[in-house]
Length: 563
Image 1 (cartoon, one colour):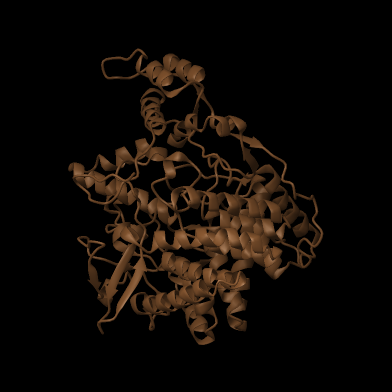
Image 2: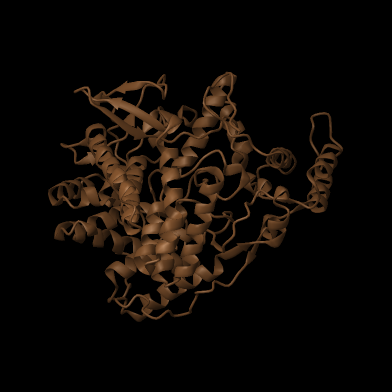
């Protein structure tokens, strides 16, 4: 079922009664306990000990003061009696394919100290391995965690569920670790989500059904297939990938553009099916929206907040009209370079996978689709003089049913790491002249720092802005440079990878943890900013470090650690 609003005619996927009561508990907890160590996600990850009507009755029956607040003792009593912590939804499970020192693990990492550290990172897969508990499988209506069939690797810390695009780099690391069965299980879980919802959710929680995340499932299937030659997995994945492709290329996600020669092109955008505060950030979003007076403007902002979460870049000045005001988020009116690069790669991947199973019709269909998208990206995003692809801003009044007239002045000429993501794709990185131009542009962009590539040049206190660097960004750009075959590009790639490995190593030695993000302006420092405290674990950081060590090896000492 999809709902609409009088303010906003975009679709809304209704949430569950369970999520509604838990976000109400979240609001009450903030009022009772205050902001000290308050994480709103904690409350919507709780599960019920009894059926929903019983819990609702108990919650509504709590003694309240005139202003509606509940005492600390009464609220704690309710939480302890009627709710379980999120930790009971998942159980530790030993990965079936984990080996302490796998045969053939990182043969080019010769230095004993670096190899020892790499094995410690490898061992973190064991720490992060979980399976959905029997109580979730038996009574899914009492839990926001979704009942996935196969064991999972969680990112870490507050993120106690599978996340969509995180999973690609988790899988890249698992494959380095020779953990093929675990990697395959993650893919099968995501395929099940498509079979159930029509798309992969942002994360495996009931409150994430209103949006997806950067679509990288086809890339996961390709990587697993390259290591295992598992044709049965390809056969199972192909219908789901075709369904996902339709999700991103129809309705609210599709934008039709007419270029200056009258030719028609189709590109995609992020657009969450939501117009309320995000349940996992309910109290935060309400506080943000209270800066606006008009209810329809608040609904618009809630959709933009959820749509920005769908990008994976939550949050960044990349999505704001006014870079100092989060209420000016306008993600739904932006055609993002990286999203369209991911969908172009999906088209290439589907064509390849269709060939694997002898499906010539789909192989030709998606090969053609990839060529059309490449052409559209070159027209709408590419700037020949600057050697970058730039996001494109639509008019705020744009209706997805309209044909949009291209205007080159609507390119966002600000520099973000996403401007270089298309280099990750074979259709672009096989052109050495293009690669060298983009590499030179990257070197002079101001994004490359002492410890890696920053996401932006602007320090806004948002976590997807300077000085933070993120593992996925480093990996895609480095891998694109490497695959080009250009000596100059590989040299730049190696330089960036060494910086990233070094800062991960130094931070690990200091904190005994891998981090979600890093401060690229200082070697060995983890990043900050955003809605929540810095997290450790950490799935995609582990995966990228292992992938870099596999690609480049390591012979020398990491001391002196920071240079």
